[in-house]
Each structure stands twice: as structure tokens, then as C-alpha cells.
Amino acid sequence: MAKQMLTGRGIRGREYALMIKYPHVKEWVDRMAAMCQPDQIHWCDGSEEERVRLTAEALKAGELIELNQKKAPGCYLHRTARNDVARTEHLTYICTSFQGDAGPTNNWMSPREAYRKAREIFTGAMKGRTMYVVPFAMGPIGSPFSKIGIELTDSIYVVLNMRIMTRMGKAALNALGPKGEFTKCLHSKADLDINRRLILHFPEDNAIWSVGSGYGGNVLLGKKCLALRIASVLAQREKWFAEHMLILGVEEPDGRHLYVAAAFPSACGKTNLAMLLPPEGLKQKGYRIWTVGDDIAWMRLDTDGQLWAVNPEMGFFGVVPGTNMRTNPNAMLTVKSNTIFTNVALRPDNTVWWEGHDDPAPAKALDWQGKKWKPGMTETDGKAILSSHPNSRFTAPFTNCPTHSFRYNQHHGVPISAIIFGGRRATLAPLVYEAMNWEHGVFMGATMASERTAAQVGAIGEVRRDPMAMLPFCGYNMADYFGHWFDMGERIRQHPKIFHVNWFRTDEKGRFLWPGFGENLRIIEWILARSRNAVAGVQTPIGYVPNPKDIDMTGLRLPAGAMDKLLAVNKKEWLAELDSVGKFFDQFGSRLPDELWAQHKALRQRLLASKA
Ligand code: OXD
Ligand code: MN
Image (cartoon, rainbow, N blue to C red; front, side, top):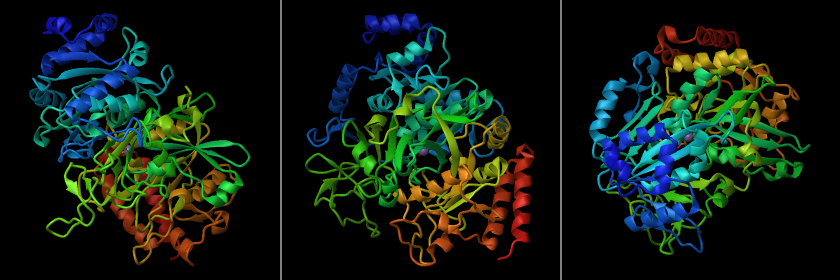
């Protein structure tokens, strides 16, 4: 088979030379091709000529629909299968020799069983198709952060998305060199059958196998699979952090640039925060925001004893519905050109539309499945039929964003002044509070919880614990992951302060108390002031909350009493929360770091000793 692949009709001279130069890659590609049996193999170089050619092929095959090139230059629409619209966590596995190494929060399969099951599905899955060899780098090429992966896929959609989301092509292969270590990523759409879908991670082999899906989070293997699940294992081994965090640069009125990293569960507004537009009051003071990343942060200790971070990605894979000029003007500007939309509605003029768009609903359109749609349509049970899937996405180049930081390619990244954890909680968590020290901050991250959103399959609204927003993305036992956070705390000499925010607290009538979006900068301003000890905090049993006078409210009026409600700490609710946290911790048994139980006990004592 290997010989056939070398002389097969898809192999050109230039590609042959590449394979000779990277024998270890060639050997692996041959083996995978022998199993998947593609008609041809194409080694991607990442060139513009290649993009044009592949786009034309995808249009011909119906994988992409060309949008109005006058109004949306370089933009295309893709529709996934109806049953393939979000990450399928129940089909996502960490495959380690010992189940304990995957831990109680991950699905586990032994590598032997996983390879056997997947091999059955992969065998012959690429017959009649092309296998694309996609070399890519996560992180600036040549930087100490950078990791190389190679994805084999039979989906042009994947290739074109990887081209946006990563540093893809020749440069990545060059960086790999003849013997370099790389993550072996194999993907096939196969028959898109949910019963034959598996997203498998093999940390011991530095490999990822994904089959039976075409949805981004399952198939753009550089993103969740490599940059979080596999990278988290590498990070523990090599003493750094691979986190589900945005990176935001704040240019203060005095010209100082400070950077924060923030973890929020999926679809809780990370992209909005990363692209934040300062509200008028703060803009006048001279604040500017720089976007470094909206989803993933890799952080390392530098020689100054501080944490420095890079965004390993090169693009945005953002949630579309609700995005408009009010909620996220920078995202709207970002998706004006060279963007691939997935599962949104198509208007008669070949432009896209979605729920929450600035334009009014079109009189008619094609919905995300390509069916005729008009406003007001309902299911038989009376539920509105949406034009766009709630988890519809845009894939757009990072540099499209008007606020993208010029430091995105900086080899050592940006220094992190504060770490922010956040959840979507209607009650309990104040708008913002600060941990008393690193250990307390780790406890705060480890006990994060949020209401489920459309980015995961499952019941929307249900509260689930999502430590550091890494529950679906930690590639090893989360107890050991918490231990890694404590271990790193001992290594860091200049600790960033740790905060928790909750933009989603509601009043008795279920109305949001805080306007969110750009106004969140007011809270970040307080966070940065606290980071350099410029303002005092108010001590509560759960940490420090702001003195309301220290939050700059220029240009923003909240209803009377709203700020008190936003910052309130309810003893009874918190004691109940601790019971729930205790149950969550119990599942880790003796592997859970003692420090977390110590923090749990100390918080209970502080609560019991407090008044109301
Ligand atoms: C994402 C997610 O797509 O977290 O970023 O689901
Ligand atoms: Mn994410």
C-alpha cells in the first residue's frame, strides 16, 4: 500500500520531495493512508493558490456556498449535517493505559480498545476521497511555546478552517525538521453517522483520532483536541499552562499595557470580552483594548518569574447568534471578509443573517439546513424555528479584528497581570471578587460552575461545575490538574492576582443586574487597580469585593440598589454551594490535593463566623 501511495496519481514531484525530507511523517502518512484508503493524497503548503483551488473544489462539491462577493469578499457558508452541530462530549475520550490517568471527569477507553474501535470505522473511510496532509503550528513558529501538529483529513472544510485557525503549511513543516516531534492528528468524516462518531485522544502517543463528525470543535484538531486536551498533558509534564482562556490587553490612559487571561465556560462571552469596546465614559479617559486571544492561552514562566502568555491560534471560531454592532462591533468588523460561516441563514442576496443580527429579520431566507424560512415560523409544539443554529459559528482570521494586538506573534508572549475565572450564575456569585492568595484562587477556579449553553450537547440552563472552564478540555485526571496549579504557584515568583467575575447575576424577576459587554471594562479597571494595590478591597468570607465607589460608573446608571445586589454575599447560598462543591471533590478520592479540602474548610469557617 505504501508503494501505491508513493506512486499514486495524487502524488506530485514536489510532494514526493517533501515526503523524503520528512521520513517519519511520510511513514505515518503511509500507514494512515493504507487504513483509510483515499484515492489520492495532497500535502498542503498553505499557499494562496492552494486556497483558491480548494475553495473552488469545495464550491463544486457543495461543501461551501459562495456568499455575495461584493458585500462579503472572501466569505463562504458551510452547512453541517443536522446531527453534527456541536462538540459531542459523550463521544470524546481520553485513552490512557490506566483509567485513573484520565480521571473521573473524562470518558475513558484503553488505547487498545479505542484504536480497535476507530480502526473499524476508519478502514476504507476515505475511498473516493482525497486525504489532505495539513501541517500546522500552534503558537508563533520558532517560539518556545510553539507545538507542531499534522492533521490528515478528508474534509476540504477542515483544511480551509485550519488555514484560518492555525499557522498552516510549509512553514510549519519546515519548523518540524526531519526528526521533530509532532501531534499525529487523524480525521475522517466517514459517513457522519453519530453512532460511528468518536473523538479520541491518546496522550501517551501524542495522537488524536476523530471520526464521523464535521463540526469544528470535533474536527479542527489543533483547537480543543491539541491546544487544550493534549497540550494540558504536555503542560503538566513540561511545567507550563494550557488553558481555556482569552487574553486581553488593556492600554491604560497613561500608556501602560497590561494583560489579563480569563477563563469562561463555552459560549459565555469570551469572544465578546476579548474584543471589548470601551464604554464612552472610559474611552474618554483614554482606555484602549487589544485582543490577543479569545479562547486558548498557553502560559509559561519567564526569567522574570512572571507568567507570560501566547494565543496558540491564528483565528476566531466564534459563536454567531447574538453578535451585532451593539454586543460586539469588533466581531462584526472581523467577519466582513475572508470568513467561513457555519450553519447560519442565507438571505436572497447571498448574504448571511442570524438571530440577533443588526438587520431586521429578512422576509424570507434559507435556514441553516437550507430549508425555506420566514420569520414567525414555528414547530408543531409552537416553538419558534430559528433561522440559524444557536451554535452557528464564524471562522475568521485573527488579523481581521480591528483590535488585534500587534504582539500576537511575539515569541515570548505577553506578561499576565491578573487571571480571571468566570461563570454564568443567576445567583450566588458576585459581579466580581478577588482571591486572598494563589491557593485560594486555585480553589476559586476549581469550584467554578456555570449554566450549560448551546456549545455543548445537553440540557441548556442546567448548572454544571466546570473547573477553570476546563472540564471538557482537560486531557488528564483533573485532580492532578489542580495539583499542577498548586505546583506552578510554588514556581511563580510574581503571582498574578486571581479574580472571579459573574456578568449574569439576575434580580428577583430574572432580569440581568449588570449590562455586560463593553461595560465589563469597568470591572477590569478595578481588577487591574487591585493588581497593583492601588485601591482597597472589602473583605468578605469569599474574598475581596469592590467598594462600589471604586468602580468608575461614568456614563452608566444602574437601578437603585443594583450594585448592592450585584456584590452581595449570601451566607446561606454559599454554605449550600460548599455542600455541592464537596460532592464534586469527593469523586476524586485521595488523588485530590489536600490544599483544596483545606480551602473548602477554611471558607466554611469564614462563612460560619460571618454575620448574615
Ligand atoms: C469553543 C467552545 O468552541 O468552547 O470555543 O466550545
Ligand atoms: Mn472555547
